[in-house]
Image 1 (spheres, rainbow, N blue to C red):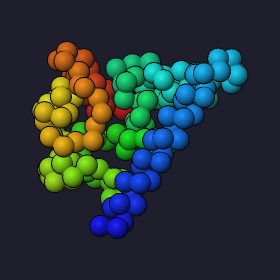
Image 2 (cartoon, one colour):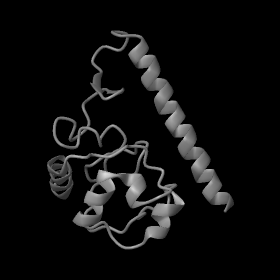
Image 3 (cartoon, rainbow, N blue to C red):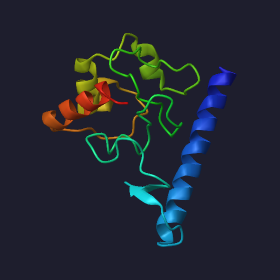
Image 4 (tube, rainbow, N blue to C red):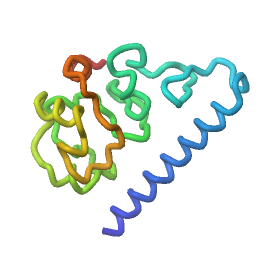
Length: 145
C-alpha cells in the first residue's frame, strides 16, 4: 500500500510540474523559440501522432515504441494488451481491477465515456461522442509506430 501511495504522489507531482511548465511556456509567448504547441503543452519537436487522429492523446501519452514517458502511460500496442499493464504506473483502482485486455470494443466504450465505462477511473477526458472519431483513434493506435 505504501508503494502505491508513493506512485500516486509521484504521478501527482509529475502532473503538477508538467502543468506548471505548460503555464510558464504559454504565459511567455516567444520566450522559447522553436517550441511546438499541442493542446496546452509545448514540445521541442511535435510528438509522434500530433498531426493525426491521436492529436488529443499525445498531449499526455506517447504512442511510439519506446517513446518518452508523459503524464499518462504509453499507448503503443494498447489494442490487445492487458488493462493496467505497466506495474510501475499508478492506475486507478477501477482500471487495475477491470482485468482482461483492451479490445477494440472496450476501447470504443472507454473513449466514448471513460467514467461511464469504468466508474472511478482517473482518466480526465470527458470522452469522444463521435463514433467515427473513436474508430479513427483506435485504427491509429493499432498502427502506431
